[in-house]
Length: 266
Image (cartoon, rainbow, N blue to C red; front, side, top):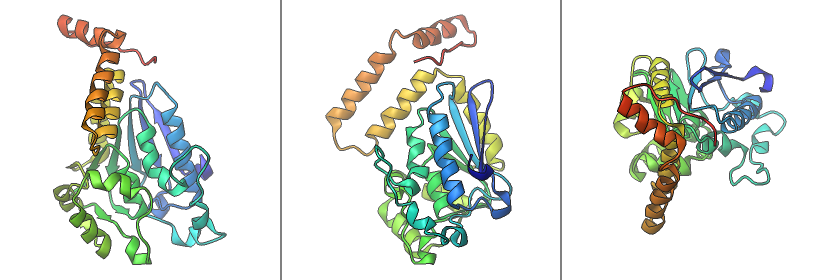
């Protein structure tokens, strides 16, 4: 990982713990952190053993946003606008939207500051837990900018456009409690990492093929206005699961009242 900005640990149940590891800077985003995040999404997306992902920040904060001083040197910010062949999003956007390319569910554990680009990374997760006193902001207006790290693909699923505009126009900081009321976070808990890990392990105990299919189903249909395509995808995914080894194992384990033993293979 770029200059040791990210660590990844995968346990025996296939839960990957992805840690933003720049605690002394509240995990601020410099170019090395962007590169490390891109590497991290590639690694977990390409590992079929991963059944759930927990994303969190080392130290006091999840991520305090852009490291303005670091990215201002040598055209670092401009370089993030590059789009690699085969990617719809640029490098800045991919650290958020690429979590959607991870087949397994991604859970963000938010503590401390979660500002600007840090929030946009968290919005790329499937589920977000935050402490009551965490500080959350769409902060780009403070720097005379607009949010541009994939927020058009994530925020509309969570809040109304009026809420999005109010938060974006002002850049105001909300607590975890208000963020939950607004829909920015899923749940407020005292220890987000502990709760995220508990949820990840619960998910990891389910059929990975069913969980991956469910994520794909919602990701591809949640904002779709094509009812026919959405209903068709439901059927296609279900037919692919019915009678498969993991689906049969789920049935057999349930009937025998034992823990299922699922296979991660394609």
